[in-house]
Image (cartoon, rainbow, N blue to C red; front, side, top):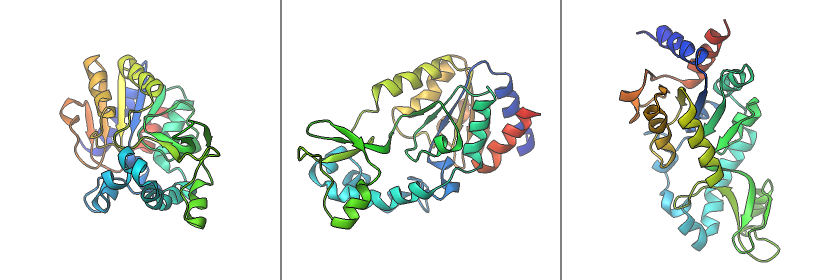
Length: 251
């Protein structure tokens, strides 16, 4: 099949689905100017050892290293705007064709695009939690404060404040993962967009869906471990493909 035929096939699968969900990864946000983590030329982990800055063990011993690393990324996320792929998924949800967006991203771009049911399996940067007393506070100014004074943000009790993102070595939020797994078991179509499907336990979700008989659609530049099990695989730009899928569905 050529690209147009593949896009039409995806549109037909979603149009006729009783319960379609999307699973998105960093690749859906790279067109918005946010770098991903694993691309051969530009991935963040090619520049930095993730265990040195983005693991819970590193955070507990050297939280300043995490704040230094994440600040420019947080700044990019703050000013980034949803691209056409985010908007297409929001349109599909609004029209009743998509039941939820499960995302590995922490950038809020799905919400900014208008998606209502967003399951953030890797957390977000909107809040932070004290590692001592577990108080939760808004996190918007934490990164700017760190850059201004060089001091690791702390709670009133003196405990270190950690943004509510999931670091290496942490378990994803249980309630969010349970909901994501419920959608994986119930869906008859799962659209995987911009995810390498390399991070546990999220990478299991398409396999859970497939075992329940769901059709899997992959839209990602690079091959994934799920390609052989998918009904349709499109190795192309999600920002080009998803709007065209949405356009075909609305016809």
